[in-house]
Length: 528
Image (cartoon, rainbow, N blue to C red; front, side, top):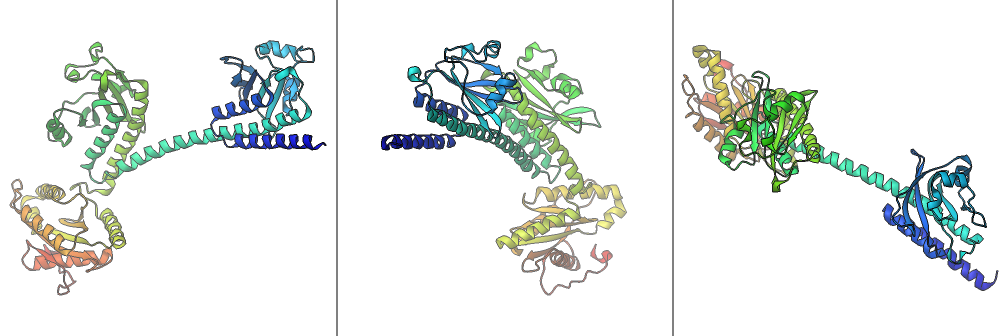
């Protein structure tokens, strides 16, 4: 081979290698189609070409990019056996003879392929699977393709087939990742909501969070969540959001006042509850389902049922789309996702509450409190922080039960438990240890801080008036990690010993554990 021909061939091979590399770097399908077509157009001076991708499920080629064909939306079936076998050979082939007559006249006519002024078809095949097809008009000067040009075409289309397949996988994985990210976001939302599922009062925080998400994603002005009460057979507004009267809203959310309740089937919310189907009404004045009180300050509404295990447990309402816009089906789909999470979360909250809280007092049961305490000990150890345990016993509570009856005693336990819950920090935890005995977990508190809390609780509780009962005092014992112990059993025992010491010294006092305190508790009669 002459030197100049060798140099030209080397340059052409270098060009081919660079073109293949360029295609392999592109992950956007549209960019890839344009780049591949551009390489062909520039290399051969093609004025008209069409790039098709193949859908094996539909057995259809679809035009995805073209030069010189105008805005053409075009598809065609793969054809009969002969043509399909020719495509599977993975080599460029002519579709017209030297005189310009079609080589596959019946197929071209049936598929209306005369619209494609092509001379040469180049299959895009990877591992025996057809990825696409390149249809080409005559090259510049209408000269036939030489062997190297056909080789170039075969190699570049082979790379294009791989790149298109890679793009498809990338797009599919990207879409799957987006779906996964969305799923993870939903799971994250459920996890965030789940952190509020410790006490029955936290149900309010859970519902407020759910409602805030519903209002935000639909760009609504306000909203509400109604929960169904099986005993009364009514839908009750449990939380509100977005009201101008924030004081009224807060009182409703705190259960200090009650809004009107609705029967199943009554109003929009009642209808949604009955049918388990969402509803949108963008002009309430034109809908007969609205009742007078329901129309106050409401222009439009989207209402979604919360369904779990085929049971409707409540409804989410969002009202008044901002900027005068209307609620859409897309809003409904988003609300459905929130409602599905809400239903599961609320149901879990109720089940969780039954599992970890004492039915009488609403405090943690002893078993779950110990789990919380163990978690906090690990945290205290990791971050080198103190924590304190406070044992609490009601003084002479047996006399209350004997004199006033156990119903009165239960009412007292409820009132005192509510007092404790309202007067400790959010990060603190309290459980019913047994009978009239309680245990408190005070994270990030040394013995001095825990003693101050115990003294405050003792003094404030003495002022609480119990219906038809005398004031009740408490005795408290305090032990602190790590100075008094590094495990659950040791801390509980020492806090209990300190509490008994408070009893022994006359009750109605708080005592910090010290080495001088005996570790053996006397009989329960003496302790009370």
